Amino acid sequence: MTERVAVVTGSNKGIGFATVKGLCQRFKGVVYLTSRDVKRGEQAVSELNKLNLHPLYHQLDVADRDSVLRFSEYLQKKHGGIDILINNAAVANSRDLYNTYEENKYIVDINYKSILTIQELIFPLVRNNGRIINISSDCGHISNVKNEFWVKTLSKKDLTLKEINEFVDWFLDSSKNNTFKKEDFADDGTVVAYRVAKVAVSALTMLQQKELDGKNISVNSMHPGLVRTDMTLGAGFYNADEAAETPLYLALEAPQSLKGAYVWHDRKVRDWYDHKADYYFKTSALRA
Image (cartoon, rainbow, N blue to C red; front, side, top):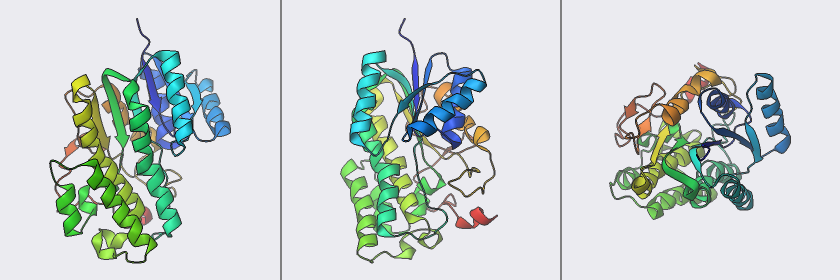
């Protein structure tokens, strides 16, 4: 019988680390902890070993195509495929509410464009009836977008990847050319690169679901809640172990029929298309 395999990206700390821990405890199969920095990844594995949990480790820099390709080839050769993929790798700059173009581009590259590379090189390894979870955010709900053209475009049921990429590029161009308007986004356009990247991820999730329906693979995005991590500067309502419960639920317990959904940290599906909803991220929460 083929051994089952689960992979969590960016999992040497925070929610990713807690998710790996939970998978080691509950998933009957091999669990991969991955990180960009090998030393930090190996330290994380060592911490779990002390708890008598034994994930495998592999280096993975989601922003480096060659790194993703090496990992993909390794998984193919070693296991022939995987069953669970949790796309958790992410960065943000919560200390500065407005960032430079270079910072914005980096945030978009890690949080969104890396998912496109993962989709190209690792999605084909996901076996029939597998599960893919894209860690999004309340920043990833469409209510974060206030520009009428983009709300209308992103709300289309026949939205294309080209249009999602155009949305992302529109923002990056505005940042580069100093034409960015705060009123185009919720909360005065704070942490806007993270909002744009996560909105793109949430929208992309639904396209990915359509492509993988034939293999009965479920693809969902989720908001883990405001979690006390380095990314939030320690602000939040949940610790990492608590925040990991929803991705673990989606990976291990949710019905396979739950597909292409945007799931809140309470495990309930939210209407991603409700652009007038009060689901957008408020930076005041960082100071609560």
